Image (cartoon, rainbow, N blue to C red; front, side):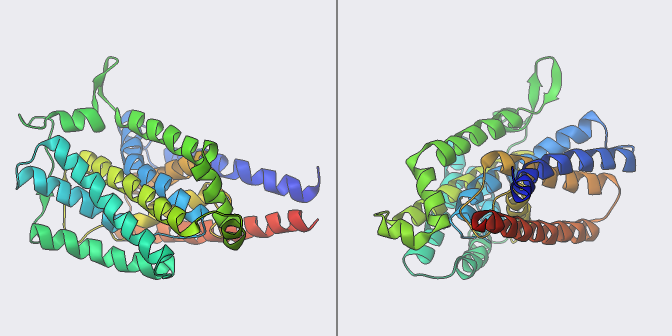
Length: 330
């Protein structure tokens, strides 16, 4: 094996190693970190980050980006809660509303990128502001709440999606079943279906994919719509974890998902990535978020360090891409 190939292989162990090192560091840095409650908090914050990351992995592999993830997630959670609390729709229908809101904005992103030929950065920046405003308009800038476990109507919501008393454990994190279940679904779609093969083909060389007979525009719309469905699901998981949804929020949440994807090995230039790497990257972001809070750092410091991680992840991706290009040339 050549030295350059060994460097590529080393990339596969960087993310798992970073996860272990980060967890050990915070365990020593904060006495309250290495506890069962903190572990549950890590899992609960990883749910909504994970669903965002699973969806945007497909987009980034095609060479695109989605800056609207956070605000669309909040809009989906906000409108789902609005239909349940204010319009008194059945909770199951409200859950479908949240998913459809995510899918709708994803479809809109796909149409603007594929058909109108807008750069993904500009198109999703626009939907980021649109979704933030849309949720506020519908709810009249009023916070909305999802049912708690003690409510007679919809009391099953948190028990099904976030925590329940199972296997003799009080407050067992049942959300991990949803996270792993949809991780398996996303991994199968990406690595075992025609959809996934076309995603890699478009990201590797869009013009070559087009010349080979792939309807690139339609598949891009499908990719952004699928990501929107995952964002709608992330809104449900966020609602299950935090209950109260505030209009006008969500900015910055997209960076947790995108950074997790990049840390996990998906290239920002497109054409490569794995869902396993994304899952590891999600846990890194969740450990970082929970660990900084356990160390007593206030929100501005948490944002600052998250920004450093974003820069580090992009620099790592640049080095990874250069190493891959050297291997191809040799």
